[in-house]
Length: 152
Image (cartoon, rainbow, N blue to C red; front, side, top):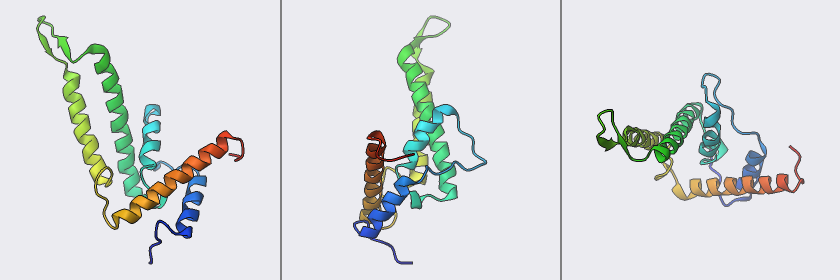
């Protein structure tokens, strides 16, 4: 199958069609918490719609949960501080620091699995072009919705 260049008219049309479609559905066997959905949306927008496979969507859900956990733990750590007092009255490093480090390592591993945040397999320039084009199409859609020019 011949691939379409990211700077072609066909790619621009495809990006606009993808932006007009509803977001990709969460696989039926995967559960997300309400706090995970903003991260799910962000993860899905990191790639062009047609790049996602069923297996990738499962990993994307895991990444969204991990990012929500990082945000939750960071908020708690901000409130508690990096140094806390244990039961004996000794100042110690807040255990949440270690939890955040573990979650961050997991996030990076999941991002590597999805080939996000690093070098993209295949023709890097073409993939990046398609992703940028689809992000621009989403931005245009949101502007049209905000102006009341596009019905939902």
